[in-house]
Amino acid sequence: MMLSDIDCSKLNVEEAEQMSMSIRPSSSGLTFVIYEGQHFQGKAVEGFLPIDASPNTWADRISDLFYKHSFLALPFHRVKLLFEPVEGLLIPKELYQENFESLWLSYLNSEEELVGIKEDIDNEDKSFLFYYPKALLHFLKRTHLRLETVSYFKDLIAQAQLTTREQASRSLNLSLRLGVLDCYLVDKGSVQFYNRFPIVESQNQAVIEGEVMYYLFMLIRELDLNLETDTLNIQISTAEDEATQKLLQATVERLEGNLEERIKHYKKIDE
Image 1 (tube, rainbow, N blue to C red):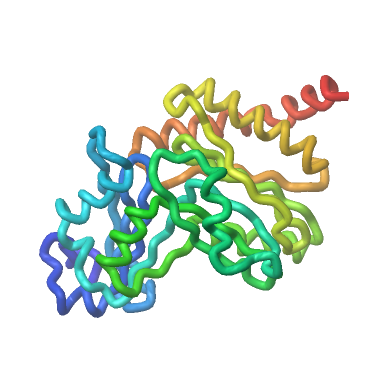
Image 2 (image 1 turned 90 degrees about the vertical axis):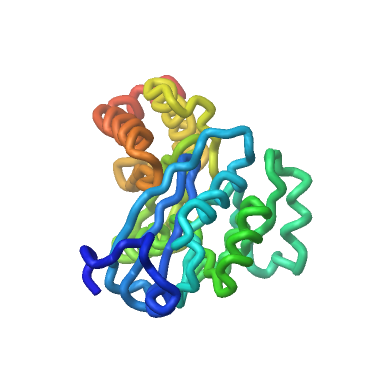
């Protein structure tokens, strides 16, 4: 079946059972990719479904998409949730214990009840402990009984591990999405730091730019970065509506336009 042959609204159960699907809910909607094969191979069709503006919780509005677009609930052979964590920690594996997730919940400030998702880091003795809206995760697991959960930047981290290992270098990676900046440092193939920071103003490009620069300067100081030898990568989320993507892209382009000069100026002031 070719890309042009697939109409999501006309997929039936038998066809879906021979396909796989990945989904990534974001602040503005849900990105989906349906693959021709059962193992996320042979990309067939992809799309973005915006969520309605309503007083309901974000989890409820994402769940409503499954009722409005019934193909999302078909019994695909495999379904992968690329989740954007609400909060997250980097912890040594030996410190993790059963029910460890609940110990941190009282420290988290969220409008929705959260649940922990543990994700081991390949080839390392560390794990991520992410938090995600409990209602949405349980809904998706009821809808797709074999749901697989993967953080949206897992592949990005794997690539940074490979690159820094080959080059014996350090890499600070910033991933900008609507309202959030995810940051992780990889040193010679090993993830050494992870944190996420809120972007308070999500619609004003100049203010977003200023907030990102504030966090970047803080990380340069706290992580003792030398950007003459260490690398800095800034990415934007591609799982937002078109207007948001344009806003984020324009922000990053302005940042990168004179980033080196800004950092040198900041260092002079800091010294």
